[in-house]
Image 1: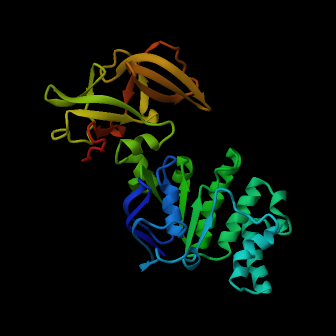
Image 2 (image 1 turned 90 degrees about the vertical axis):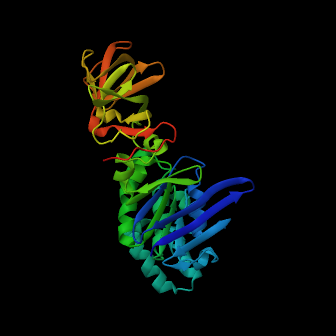
Image 3 (image 1 turned 90 degrees about the horizontal axis):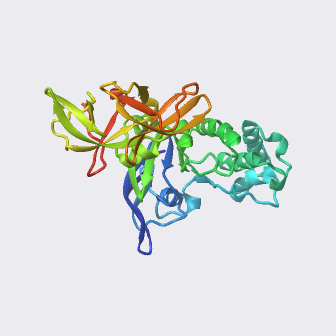
Length: 361
């Protein structure tokens, strides 16, 4: 079933954590709440779960208002960052505890636990206590406890943050598969954009208690709604430079660091503000000759090797740097004079005053 919130706000004293949110989490979709620490994403998840009460607004599950219901009456399950396993119970008892509380008999309970354990590949661990498990195994047990109940809504609060990098990579794929097996609505909280972009059907990018953009991973990456989203999504991050709209020989140009470059064709700059912020991702920047009329000259500030790629950061003006992502065999020396050129079709433009993305043709 879908989850809908209307005018949802939350304050702790004078600190307003969530600011009148309106959004719908579609049925059977994997939706991620993504943002920096303190942006309100975990508070929103806890309000959907019933662990926090809203200061204002409403929450609906499948068209039925639920914000007055206790967590136990909402048919949700939640996986926490800390796993929250019972240390004195073995794995089988941990997974089946919720079913036991609801009065399910031992035989039926054991059957359901066995089915989930097989899916999670932890059947051999059912007699072990949590202290005898690895981090990844504990995470699977926590997921099993959530899956065994067949919830309407599956909530996850940074469940992979305590795992090492290799295991996180493995678990990302498994979590997505579990979501598909459950055929339920999943809402996932993380500050890790890689998790959000690889697992999600939809991503809600949050900052300062507000949803800055809500769309598919492709939409928030290719068409960021504002400067915050543009800078938060993408690794390595997007670079920004102040530009001014001008004209040469009757054609629109952008003045950047003392050089005029052709205006990107995807924008109608006739009604745009003169002062704009240009955004470009390192993958869309190339090294160019100093005499290239469409390139911007500068000096190499620093270089970084990242596996098969190299990042070359070029200072084009004081405190204004553009990074190019190139093959690792490309070399550049510190303070070397170089020029950078942009793929015009990949340039982003933002209103310098408001930070909002300019509309495209």
